[in-house]
Image (cartoon, rainbow, N blue to C red; front, side, top):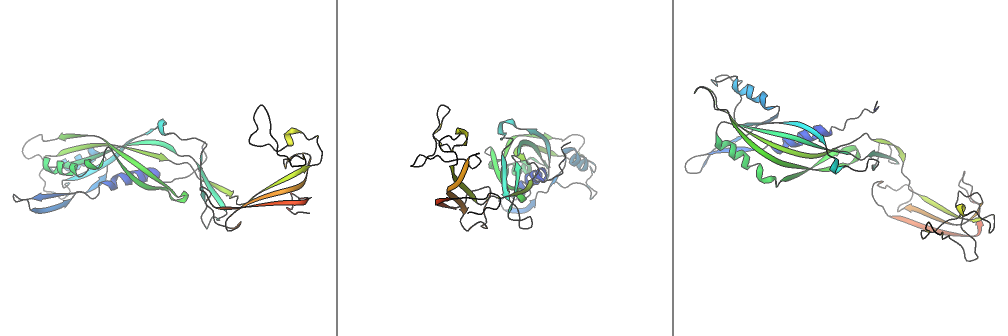
Length: 308
């Protein structure tokens, strides 16, 4: 029914972003003098907590090489919910110039993204309390309560997004049950909250308007001009209209007016560098304004654009 096939990999980028935050944590072992005797990097992988627990507990004697070495970490996305508080105007658009292969004279556009909140859980598996607290102290001070990271959300539209990640809570589970041969595992579960956006499909093919030409016409009907054909000033209100008039009393006409006559003057706006200049459709650019007055008035053919 929706009829559009597209994939910006946005959700995948959020998952990768979250895992990347914790992929360079280390724990150190020290002797009684405070000297570092060993340094171990804590590996991290995507997967639910039950998966890691099953692998840890399947070898209680720790004789097989398939046993999971502790400490280690795992994480997973647990939910995605719509956030109405951060909703943007549904008909708002994001504009961007097409690439060289698509033609620099064309424009890409998409409607505003939709805000969604994503919940993540980070699991820290350790054998003793000291390792767990050492890992936590390398994580928690950075969330106050948010930690912001910039991602390249939609490269083809040159959209970069600041993603805030908030820390909610941490809980400890000590699975020291069974006999002395059972492997002990302490599990810290950290809950996080990420604010992101999901982007719709990209539409393209429109041309970038670089030049604007406004012609001012005199009337072919004298003083009996219909008011709907007259050119109004910004000072016009619902209770009265102000029209643009010449010193001799003639009124400017709309180009689409039925009785619009010859062109009296013309305003042309073009970007600096001419019609072929490179401009950003989503931002501001310098422009040149040219004002021409025609005495006597000229006749312009709208089909050919020629003046006579």
